[in-house]
Length: 80
Image 1 (cartoon, one colour):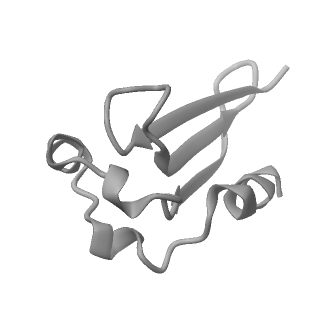
Image 2 (cartoon, helix red, strand yellow; image 1 turned 45 degrees about the vertical axis):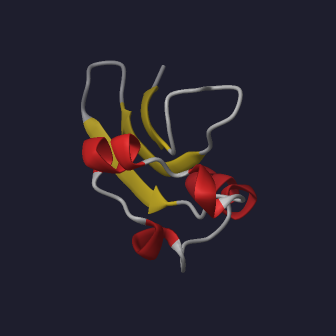
Image 3 (cartoon, one colour; image 1 turned 180 degrees about the vertical axis):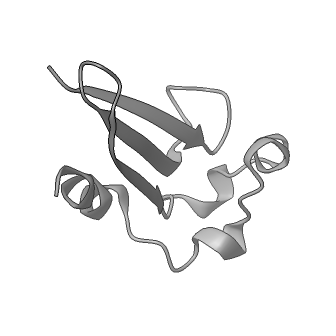
């Protein structure tokens, strides 16, 4: 059975308030042979949610995310 490893970068540390700003994923076989990668920035619905502390962690600024697709567009891209 394949394994999907997912890494999410967020706009802050509050899971009830903050948004996903980047989705990363790697797909592996059950013996950990690498099958593929996915990395996509995500435009937050509320740009002001991106905190300075979060930006220090992941290095993504409001400018970096301005042209990125919305999360509802990114998830089908990841499935493909």
